Image (cartoon, rainbow, N blue to C red; front, top):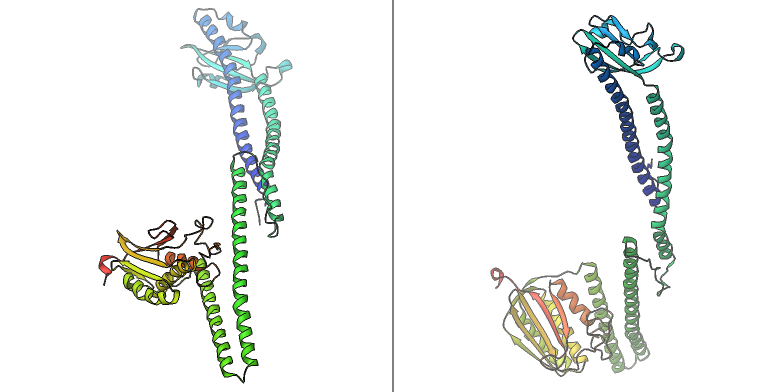
Length: 453
């Protein structure tokens, strides 16, 4: 069974009301106790003043002053009444046994027939030891105090619930006003669809938590909007890149079928189809690699490898394929890495340089403290200013095809970053390198001394 209401506004109001009720109850009890104590203190102070005067008179031999007091009696030690107020007639404030057991300064409250026509009335009594042989009892009607106490209790009993109700209503209004922007944001966010790319959340004035939440959510929508646009661009690029080789592949196969009696033409068509199939396979592999990297499931088969040796061996093949000159410099450095993926990094970087029009590429490898630096510089035109900061994003393509890579879908440098990141490294790009063109610098963790071969 659900005890709390679903609405946050109602829960806040309920908690506030319970807290207010507890505070009001504590205040009411404290006020009642304080006022009751004050009333009793006032009555007792009057009794003490009267008793002081009468004790002084009795000790000076003026017992007749006791008869002039409105409510007082003088007893001897055994409880015999010696003198008293005429209003008491034959009545007694204390019985003989109570007189004998009395203590000096004792205050008691009892109901006695001292009212009009002998009506029972609450009386406050103060016992004083006038001398060793006599006891003085002074009284005062406590009916006014009792009546004031009852009225006070009634007023507080009525006022406290009303105050709690008012505080609950005020809490409801305050919670409603405070959460109104949240309701507005909720309705607006629910109404925004993926087709409304430029729609924003309403601004909330101020600098409180809700205003900061509104700005944060709006910024998040902006980031999601950018991500959605990039995903859409990626899908468009991938669709375009897939369409061309598939169309060529289909055309070449149809040509081979139609030229079945010409072996040379069939062979040429099948070779062209094979090239396009290889291009499709590379694109599919690139997309799969990026998807795995994004999902955190990119598999790295690590082993100690000499990075300088891999670079020299692999760049020999790249020079003839890309028709550029590649120089490898540096010292032998051992890293824990996947050799196949390191070769893919070198292929993509060299391919980007060749696609940008570079004729010379320099690969420099060196160890700096606990990191291995792989610097790939070329003599090309460098990165376009509008893509330099986002060159490694998956969906960025520069006008100079700098970020095209082998797949032609703007994935080359994205794959490089994915592989370097999976190896625990970092990568960045800049222009104005040592050869005048672009420079891509990757930093990989170096293998510890105890694991070097």
